[in-house]
Amino acid sequence: MSKEKIIYGIIGNPLTHSLSPVMHNAAFKALEVDAEYQLFPLNEQDLSVFFENLRDKNSPIGGLNVTVPYKEKVLEYMDSLAPLSQKIMAVNTIVISKDRQLVGYNTDAPGFLAHLAELQIETAGKRVAILGAGGSARAIITTLSIIPERPDSIKIYNRTSSRIDNLLMELGQRIDISHIESVNSVDALNIELADILINTTSIGLHEEDLCLVDADHLHSNLFVYDLIYNPAESKLLALAKKKGARTANGLGMLFYQGVLALEHWAETRIEDDVKMIMRHALEKEVAQ
Ligand code: NDP
Image 1 (cartoon, rainbow, N blue to C red):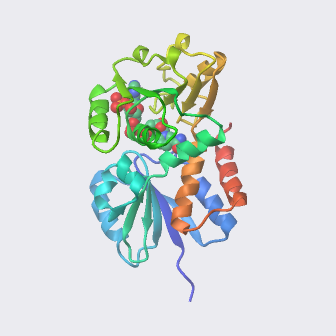
Image 2: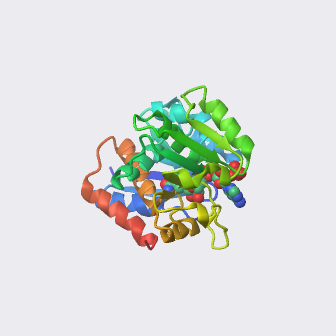
């Protein structure tokens, strides 16, 4: 009797630009498993039925990723949360057990740290400036605050200040946030004194987007990380490079979070040759 193909996928909205299918389908091919990674663009009102169906023992779905705008919304559908996702209170990877129990993981945060480690960027004792306070910022701020290599200070600016206030109020109930300060302008981030600048906003995705940071604030002692990976060089990264700063886009974070997600689904380590195939598949899609 032939076994049914296992379906993996990503839920979110919109999903048209997701690179996750390219990365995971390349891995499935390399691993010679009968599986396919699909896009599940869902409206919010469809979530509860989707999750109800997911619990059906005949469902072909073996695991999921979650992206904007549902990383926090899906918490209510999980049967349990891995410790890190419980701290971050956001889920981007769902593991489905044999008895169809849903376990929520966050692989964005370790994906980000793994990319920093690859780039040999140290965070301990550093001054970090962050643009944005959305879902990805939540993961990055939380993880930077709980690792032993915690930065000395984290300043955050977000267009909607109430979003940072709410985030910090909520995070403060779970972790020490005494080193975190919310500021009300990009200027007040004091980027000229910072060691690391991280853009977690979606500004830079589109050609017409202006750069949030004034070029005069960028400097050669700065490391600038932009979570955006398409375009491979956002205006912010281009400006920073011109000023002699070290830069990186978020493709490495996407890659590492994808590897971790696959390892959770497969309950095994992914060999380096398959990881290489996943990374090349991504890099082919985004001219680096
Ligand atoms: P969210 O929608 O949760 O947050 C978006 C952030 O961008 C908010 O801080 C929002 O501010 C800000 N923003 C949006 N439009 C503007 C604007 N016109 N002016 C100023 N600020 C603005 O998204 P995520 O945090 O999940 O994702 C953010 C970016 O990071 C996306 O580009 C996404 O593709 C990328 N990303 C990359 C990953 C990777 O693996 N490399 C992983 C996750 C995300 P406000 O609160 O005021 O609306």
